[in-house]
Length: 165
Image 1 (cartoon, rainbow, N blue to C red):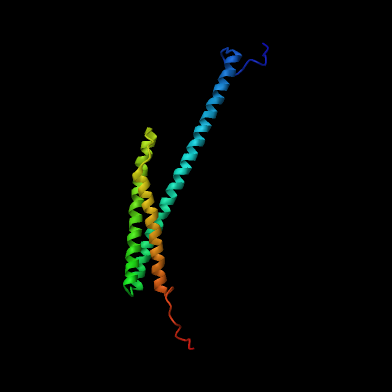
Image 2: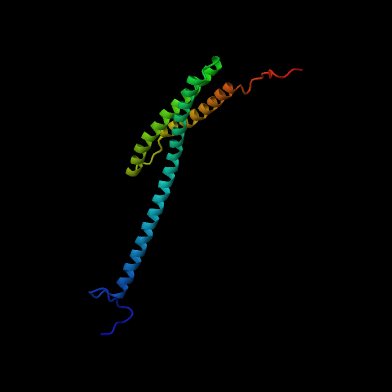
C-alpha cells in the first residue's frame, strides 16, 4: 500500500483532501476567534482591575487618614477653633469618601452583571458616586494638610524668641 502526500494516515476513514483542508481552515478561524475573545477579555479585565485599584487605593488612604486624624486629636489636642474646623472638615470628607467608595464597589458589581446580560447603558449614579469619592478625598487631603500645617505652626508668622534686633 503506497501513501500519497495528500492522504492522512491518522484517520481510519477515508476523508477527501479538500475536506481536511477546510477543517483545518475552520480550526484556524476558530482558534483566531478564541484568541481575539481572550485578548478582548484580558483588556476588559485589565481595565476593570485598574479602575477598582483606584477606588481601593482611595478607600485605603481615606481609612488611614481617619485613623491618623483621630490619633492627632487624641495626642496633640486642639488649640483653637480653626483647628477644630479643619479636623471636622477633613474627617467628614474622608468618611464621605469611604461611604462613596463602598457604594461604588456595590454598584460596580450590579453594573457588571447588567453588562454581562447585555444591558450596557451608562449608570449615572455610579459615575456620580465616583466623582463624589474623588472630590471629597481631594478636599479631605487639603484639609488634613492644613491641619498638620496648623499643628506645626507653618504659615503663621511668629518671631523667633532668640532673635533680637
